[in-house]
Image (cartoon, rainbow, N blue to C red; front, side, top):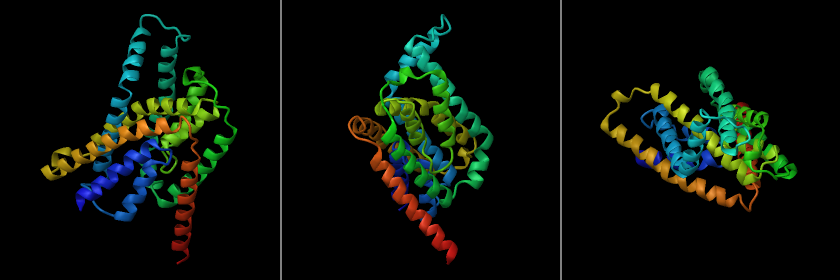
Length: 273
């Protein structure tokens, strides 16, 4: 049964990390529903973060190599008009808000915001915002067309997404679309932007885990969770980018609204009873 639970958590992490429906929110719900101790929640979440990071690194390996090369050339001569160098700067600027908020408020978020009520509200409100942006967004430009201030705005959206239920991919994709990025371009920038944040989050949590105290069984469980998340995550990224080339995000918006409304109802009923 513990392997089955690990597989469920891994699949949910992979699906919800890249779909705009919030991985942290769904993990909060899963922990609340199953109440099973997978090694411990923090340690297993580290394994899921590692799997997610691997999926991003492998899928975007060509882009990563390209932008890393552009980053190195910046030391020989910086030209903001050069698309690759500009994208590198945009990614760096857009990463800073989430890193700062994560470092300063991570403990407070874990203590006060990891609740079903917060997830429910965030899911519902986020779904409504997705519907609004889908309706009004012009969706005309590639992400290379982002200005530096616009990149920072997307970075602020990513910082807000540290609240469980908001969705990092959802917040950054919608922020990009609100700035008139094409839907698939907003998603690609969102995923590229997530790489340093996901890696940083995984490394930070790794230092909070007592790995040396884990048994062989627990280590195997973590490896299984990371690999399951990696494989599923890679397929999800590929499928999602293909899907939004010709489809809107409305199905994800309505999913968020319905799930959020159900959870809010359950919270209200629990309070009343």
